Image (cartoon, rainbow, N blue to C red; front, top):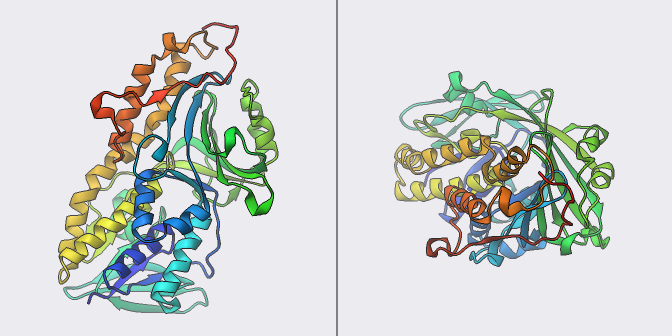
Length: 428
């Protein structure tokens, strides 16, 4: 039985451990922090991600900490509706699309690892700084929080150590320096009354000015009767450090949404009333030409750090975990062959998604509308962005990320317009 090390106890590393356990393996996880805490804000788990969680037997527990997504609606910088589509099972997918706090999801995976594998399989406060290998195994260099250093030996290593992966840096020293995109992401949460029934994701604004995504990540949060709302704002601005925990001042971005008026949500008050606000720069990481070095392989953000848009980073990491473990099961005596097969199955597919996320994905429809109206309100969205054109953009996007729209092959239109926002008297 292979003795496998996993570097990193984020959601990707923990889920990989659970997948290995399904195959009868007992991996050891090395994590640099001394104590795992539910840090971060919201993530949007697409249907393919929910399917992965269901396959681990954790669907009920996941539902208990997350919110079912029903509608996804796009508005311009004046609160005029551009496009809408149903989400998850409400569109006809077999699995739900759900919104959840990233830290709560990580803690669910962590508790499950402790229950199924045992606490001795997770080594906290152990930072992996590098590796060496030969024909029979891999030696990891570890620095402990108490100052000790040691070397540990395993048959193979799966590196899920995130955007600042030490393993990736050693494997690809010439491709590990990131480049600032010029875009800063503000991520916050606000406790408030539910909007639109508590199951809608909003896509707001003119990308030339600022973009905003809003969705609930907990209904009746802690028995308050209110929703915990996750919101994300993208601005063009100064570079910040690549760290999910850098605190930001929401007052700086409130004026960017002065023209945005929605009948069901005060966006400026949502930002002003935030419980927490974090800054994160959108960093371009070059797509890699290989995720494999002998008995060592990259997974999740370590392999394909992408702009955190559309829930694709965490969802693709979940698929990585399943595929790499499937290949290890198919090559039980040869981890290198397993890793090569995993790389062949996943890398080019995910690299295309990485490139697409740099180009806004389906959020591009708001930029199209802004360009075609010169940033002014419109009278008739059908004359600006016909529904059929928008629908085709979305259908191509969903197919790209591995979840083709149900019914699209039959020519069925799946996008629509709700006409909830009041029409503007101004014209483009």
